[in-house]
Amino acid sequence: MSFLFAHRRYALPFRVPVRTAHGPWAVREGLIVRVTDATGAVGYGEIAPVPRFGTETVDEAAAVLQALGGQIGETQIAALPVQSSSARHGLCVALADCRAGSPNPAVSGAGSKSSRAVAALLPAGREALGAAAAKAELGFRVFKWKVGVGDNDEELGLLDELLARLPGGARLRLDANGAWDRRRAERWLERCAERPIEFVEQPIAPAARGADDLLRGLAADFPTPLALDESLVHDGDVERWLAAGWPGLFVVKPALLGDPAAVCAQLAHARANVVFSSALETAVGAQAALRPAFAWPGERRALGFGVYPLFADARFDGPPAAPFVSATDVAQLNPEAVWNALS
Ligand code: MG
Image (tube, rainbow, N blue to C red; front, side, top):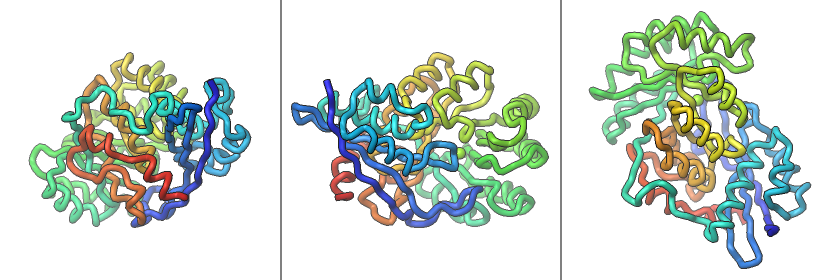
């Protein structure tokens, strides 16, 4: 059976530019795909690439859609270029939803009352201190702080101040976004060793020379767990790190995976330690990304979805950042409304 699809491109300014180790990020670009069949069933998917992570660009994804000429099926998806993981993701999700006969199927593996903790995202630098107190007041107990953004000594000096602001029993995650070299990573990991740090995310950039060996060495030498994020851009990366016996965590951004269901099955089979995370997508992609998170059979770590409200135009936001997100919140996200808002 062949399906028809249309797509709409978006360029959505963030409410506040996102500060990362690679500089500010002001506008989120991507595509929404709408798949229909002869019976009138509809499905939506989002293509939200992050080229600085190593995915295709939005232009490349748009060209892939253009070349398909408005028809999609398993054969066409299987024939997509390997590097088109974001396009594959959006088309797979939309096609599966269309097959399910509804653009908004219930969150699988979750009763309507089930919920997951969400990690509060703290701004980089000293601003994190005030933000942490405010988020703790709201009830958050897991916090994530971006490091490797400002001056290294100043950030190291802020760590204890930040920990002192967190409520008892709180967990802090650090995300270096690959900004450190070996010496900086070692200094931080020495400092973290006796502190309640849940994990340190991507201390070394995947493109750094000998990065894989360096990451494995750091994981073996220090007690604080390490998490891979930027190292896991393509579906095959997860398989490779699993085969190498990676002892740390896997940050899974379903929006960046061509086939998140297959990758999650590999991770579950290996009993891997997984953290599900946003790729700063709209409500369409957030709904698709939260489904495998709710279905995950392993340890339920706080979700990296504390990013909304994210867009200047709130119609595109995923579930508002709260200490918990429920299956009902996810089911209530409305892909059709996002599609219509782009007309
Ligand atoms: Mg990260």
